[in-house]
Every structure is written in C-alpha cells, then in structure tokens.
Length: 245
Image 1: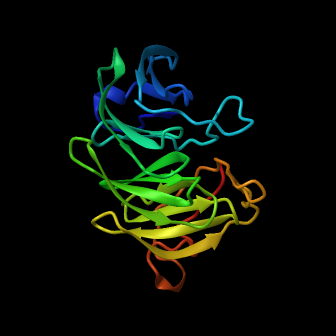
Image 2: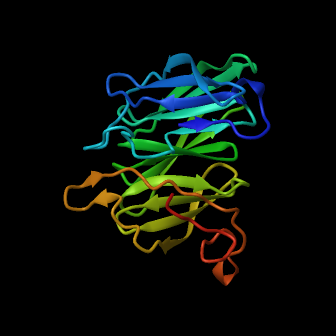
Image 3: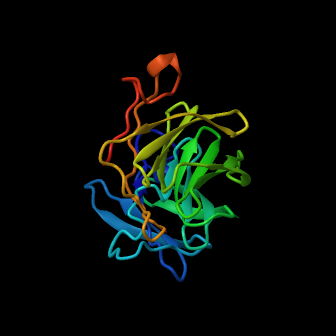
C-alpha cells in the first residue's frame, strides 16, 4: 500500500493505492481520501501481470511495503508483479474531489525470479528479485517508459531495498545472513558495490533449508552522509541507518 505525501501533482494528493497480489491477475485498487480521512473506492486497475504469494501468508501476500512506489515529482505509480516478474508503470490523475485515476504506461519483465519490491533512485528504478538474489535496474524515461538495464548480484536472500534521498546510493537487505548490501548508483544506472553491513538479528528473510525466498523487512533509510573511513554512502557512519519496521 502507498499514498502521496507532501507537494506534487494534485491527482494523488488525496489518494491511497493498494495492490491485490492476485495470482490470477494483479490489480491496484485506488481510494479517494476525504477531508475527514475516510476512504472511498475510486477504481480498480489491472497491472497486466500476475501477483505472487508467500507460502503461509494470509493478508499481506508479499510481506512487504515495497511492492508499490509513488513518484510524486511526475505523478507515476510503479508496481511489481511477483508472479510474472514484471514492473508496471501508471500515470496518476484526478483532482481533490476524485483523485487516483490510473492510466497504464508500460510493463517490462525483469527476466528474473520472485520480483517482489521496487525502489526509485533518481531517474532509475531497481526491482529486488528474491528468487535469483539480484536487483534489476531500469532507466525511467520522462514519460514513464522503462528500459531494462543489467541485473546486479546481491548476497543471498534478496528482499527489500531503499535509496538515499539524492538517488546516489541504493541499499538492499538480504535475509540469508542479515546483510545490507551498499551500492553507488551511476549516472547510467549501473550499480557499484561499496560495502556491506550485518544487521544484528536480521537473518532469516530467506530459507536456506528449502531455498525458498521470503519477503519482508522494508528499510527506512536516512540520508547517507560520509560513513566510516570517509567513504560516501557507507552505512558505518552515523548519518545513515537501516532498521526493521
């Protein structure tokens, strides 16, 4: 689930979006948020892909808050389809009386497995693939069209990801050993590893016994500064942190 916060295009200022993750056909349900905070259904929109479901889940089938991402600067909603391993983009329109109308723009496959999360980093998007232990990069064109870039490997058990506010750094949590992988984002969207940190007690986002990727643990990232050893973007410093929500 995601919603618009702060300034931006009026089409989403009063909208809340929820993804169904339906295995037979993923959908985004849009709700208009009234002046009193109550929600009313505004519409249901197909993503063009299939949802996924973590074994044993009842309500939140991906166990993640990162399957929807809203770009307030351009009024774009990005959704992942874990069953078909694709990333879909919608434009958002409307006004304060009827907000959240979605128009499909593009849908592009990652070519990987268990694509459960998406994070925006400047003009690029990065989809986390739990089943193949990597992240797929996309360049995000001015109109919202996507171009698939290379996939970059991570530590085992790729789960959620988050970027710094300036889009220069990407952090990917991996559950196999409870590690957060640190990357620098190049101007062309290429990722360069700059280090990793181990989060105490965070191992277990991936089942080593069964080889089953498990979703969860979205990251809350502060703006990175200069970390230990003077390296920009490294999480060893006090200016950046990752925590389990």
